[in-house]
Image (cartoon, rainbow over all chains, first blue to last red; front, side, top):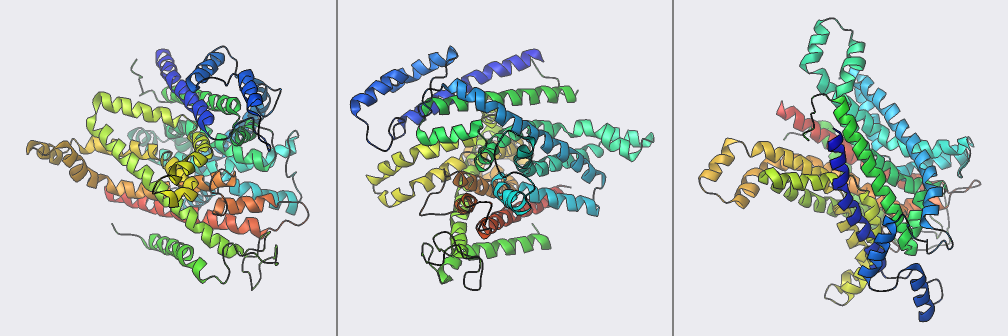
Amino acid sequence: MLTFLIRRLLSSIPVVVAVLALCFLLVRIAPGSPFASERALDPRTKAMLEEKYGLSGSLPEQLLRYGFNVLRGDLGDSLKFRGRTVAEIIGQSLPRSLLLGSISFTLALGLGIPLGAWAAAHHGKKADSFLNSLALLTLSTPTFVLAPVSVLVFAFGLKLLPPAGWGTLSQLILPAICLAIPFIGVCARLTRSGLLETLGSDFIRTARAKGVSETNLVYLHALRPAILPLVAYAGPLAANILTGSLVIEEVFAIPGIGQFFVNGVINRDVFLVSGVVLVYCLLLLLFNLIADWLTALLDPRIRVAS
Amino acid sequence: MKLSRSALVILGLLGMLGIAAVFGPIFSPYGVGELSDNRLAPPSAEHWLGTDLHGRDLMTRLMYGARISLLVGFVGASISLFIGVVYGLIAGYAGGRTDNRMMRLVDVLYALPRIVLVIVLISLFDLKLKSLLDGTFLAPFATHARLLLLFVGLGMVEWLTLARIVRAQVLTIKERPFVLSSRLIGQSTPVILFRQILPQVIPIVVTYLTLALPAVILEESFLSFLGLGVQAPLASWGTLLADGASMLNPIDTPWWLIVFPALALVSCLLLFNLLGDQLRRLGTDSER
């Protein structure tokens, strides 16, 4: 198992390197300079600025320089937020986004799994089809629709919660829920279909023949193998919550990593964009690794060939 | 394939949406960009869904936005369909090492923040592509450079799942006797792949199309909402919603500018997802 994980990790390295290089080059090739503001820049000043930030020379030279710096743990300076390093910006904003994301992640799974299990237990009845429609509705309601509508209704209409900001618990409620809702439906549907498939298998028939109650059958015996597809979905879910977070941070004015990323792309802030993409890649790879490991843990039939 | 009654209802509603998108703007008494002094008017008999900050009729803008959203959805989904089917066919039929490598690449791409890369690609290459196109016979398309990038970028995001599904199908299909007999009578590999195996995969592909479509529409609106997708003078549901969201304020928010674009987008996504659900159910029923 360990060797499998290590091999997985090692085989991801070239991908991360390729993505980082691609991202750096894309931003550098793109028209528009990170140093240009409203007025045109004196060519000499521009050359000096490029020299200072390590963006002089040919593209491969710049890329190599950046690559070595990253290896040494130096992500460079932000070009737009002068005087702040990319590492500093990420260090400050990432925890906020991670907190928000992990709450939503927990909400999506914590509500999705029981709802799906309940639907499977009532398979073919009214409750099942009602939950199915509800799940379809939630997964058709994207984050960027929910966010402004919920601000309109709950913050300005009913005046229950603050419309934006960061720092207090009540400011966290709306964004976390808006971020989670579209994925509750997906989780519920995956749990339901996984459970229904498991409930049709032989070991469940045996357990039923032995007189295990229906409730125990669903929640104790069948749930463990049934949530395997859900574990496999954990990686994509993390990716979706991450991108959903871009919108949520925008609407609710949360100074998270997503806001810096969007700003960075618009400003051609090459080190900031590359740095954030690197963090995103590493986070997602880590998530997928954990998902793989959990899958093997939950399913004794999987013997990873190593 | 026999469609259930609810599937037909859904198809009918989607058809109405399509008709509204194509013919609505033509019959509307207002032009898409037509400004008026009647600013931020709430819904009334004159303007059914109200007007925006510049006095433009929201209903006309929504129907026009439907064109862009649906167009990006269809083209993007078709591109991802094409890539996914070809990739899955080749991987599944080749088997062995090639299959292993190709699927490993899919795994890796799955683990990447693809939409983030699309953001980088689209927002940075818009001007470059515009100047590239300007010099060639494709110059008329130059103003829509961003739309073209959206097609390609979003098409490249959604093909992974389909590649996996098609490959899994091909793995079982290629062991069937009719493929073996095709090989025995000396048919070439491309012929076997596209004439023998492909038709077997099509039902699944159709089902997947109804799921990829809303996914692409959603992603386009997402990018447009952030200001990184469709740009003025074009408008999609995402930009309309973003316009509404930017008017949010505690005193008198023009609610219609948020609620109606939201309703349009959600009902469209829901209809496609419902249709996909029906088709998938049909598929599992016919297997049994």
